[in-house]
Image (cartoon, rainbow over all chains, first blue to last red):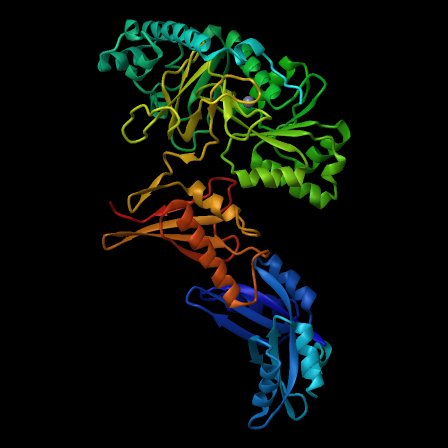
Length: 143
Length: 436
Ligand SMILES: [Zn+2]
């Protein structure tokens, strides 16, 4: 139920982002979702791609510092208060969200959010127990 | 552990006896150099000192220093004290900045060099029967040939493999059963990487001890080399202006300093700014006078290496003074807000943090009247995280540890890998943008 995410270290220099997307395009790797977090000095680019192993390899070969982490793709009702209802479940279970971002495509009527937790397995269990749908890597790549 | 000596009597001589030998040799040297080499005589006359003024070892401080530029100014053979037909070998520095420096050896010098190198090998526990893998470069550089003749003198087997062709080296190491490795510490790490690639298990090799020198290296690097190559790593010191490898050598009983073969190479520690001789035990620039060399003796040569002399007796029984691992170069010393800072200290901090690689660059600037120090550190895969917080904490931790070690506040900036040039060739570790 986990989704593999690629993270890349970026100095805040112009052109690096397009270099990364260029490398991936050259290798026929499709970016399904992308989020950039940054500070004054550096940034971390997080990607969900269709070919994780290959993306990791070609980026490393391109001289980037690359890491792979597990995240969770959660279906969120696409209505007012939809996200709040999910967050409420997490809050009640005292689960800390490290970060989250929206997935581009929808899953049927629902939006999809990517969540990063310290305790991934525990988070999956709690969300599922609360009746929230979690999507696999294959599922979200098919959206 | 049985202790191996090469020349036990002199290596364990009570210091008083050693000092009388040193004084006699020094007086003889100064007289000879004064008579035969004009540049030395001119400098001594300028300072108003004559050979007969050297009455005790303390009088050494009266003599003028010799610096690298003196060698360049007298290029190529101007400081030789014997006719060229007595010189059986020359070596030269690469001369990346300006003219190369040239040194020469008589037959007796070569023999002396082999003896001190054999002493160094014995310090590392090497003996007849060892298979010595000599990966120092052979050629104008003193490393390869200097070590080579010491191994032969000792009666061990030398494999003159020289530098480069790393995979072949590993095959040789495995097939010949190399027991002792001689190389630069960074090349030892290259060997470890290549072994990993070739899936050669270092615990299946016969390597027992590695003798590493010709570049500065830290305690953390020692730990890394020992772990990755499954051997004991010891430090050797030497420089071509003084002799080549075999000037000082760590024994197996301590990691606190290398025994200086001071019956031949007389060390001093001076303040790099004032040139004053510092009291025993203080840290400063290392200065050497060769006591017995014939073709190219040198008086009070400023090595630019920062070290300390340790006079406490060593467990191995050698009475020879120890020089602490070189911790920096007086050239590299930065004065930041009045504090002496060596780039090697920053490296030491970085190597001490799990996963951080010592790829860094220090940028010093002046804002108003205040010096600022920025340390750029490459982010390796081992410390990278997808979480901003984790990387920010890493930066803060490095800042705190540098402040702890150096007493200077700095800012750490995490940068992408390979932003900073690697140590093959000369990595620019410091950019000083201050206009002083
Ligand atoms: Zn010792």
